[in-house]
Amino acid sequence: MPRHTAATAPAAAKPSTAAGSDTPSGESRLALVRRARRINRELVRLYPDAHCELDFTTPLELTVATILSAQCTDKRVNAVTPSLFARYRTAADYAAADRGELETLIRSTGFFRSKANNIIKLGQELCERHGGEVPDRLDRLVKLSGVGRKTANVVLGNAFGVPGITVDTHFGRLARRLRWTGATDPVKAEHDIGALFPPKEWTLLSHRIIWHGRRVCHSRRPACGACTLAHDCPSFGEGPTDPDTARKLLRAGPFS
Image 1 (cartoon, rainbow, N blue to C red):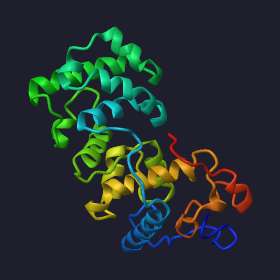
Image 2 (cartoon, rainbow, N blue to C red):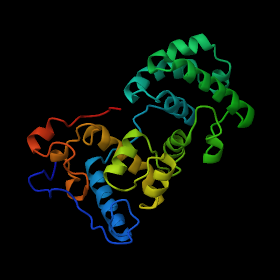
Image 3 (cartoon, helix red, strand yellow):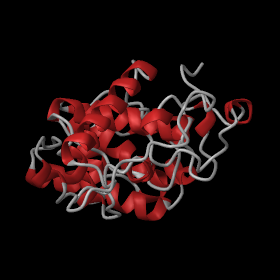
């Protein structure tokens, strides 16, 4: 599966620590941009069909699904949403939802009372402020109940084609491992990473990184020895570097 293994990879990608460098890796700005874009090209090769793993057909469905995905796997959300979307088709339907019924439908996603509250309020706000339609602007989306910047970027990028970087748990973890950013604050990380790539790449880059985090670069035991990003990864060696051991850690998607 991998094109390169630990046998051919360097011990780690070790950027220079030139005096005055303000990059998280110690590289020059130009070197960081070049390395980041090499990684992205390899991710394109690895995941040519990368996409949002939440099932949806409309901006409203994606917004609701993304709210449900908090502290929950995409697989679980996708098991819940067919019945949910068949029952509630419009913002007005959510606004008038029976709380008990809605909570029952989404119970298995966890935190169902809080999520139901946000979804009902979302429906009401969309009807009151936006004619029942999900807006296609970040500043309007983030004012809706249950919609933070991460959710807004998911909706913008995948429902409206507006470029955005989605800094979820996987993305933030990998971006720091790759030394694209040192920030733990999602907004700061979003701006740091966005500056490395043209906007047209942002949405799919987010999916590629998330897919890689779910399939290869795991939180506790990244499959370093089976990772084709090894040559450009400053964190190579955090997980097993033996190719055979690492290959056993690889996963197929979808996962969350």
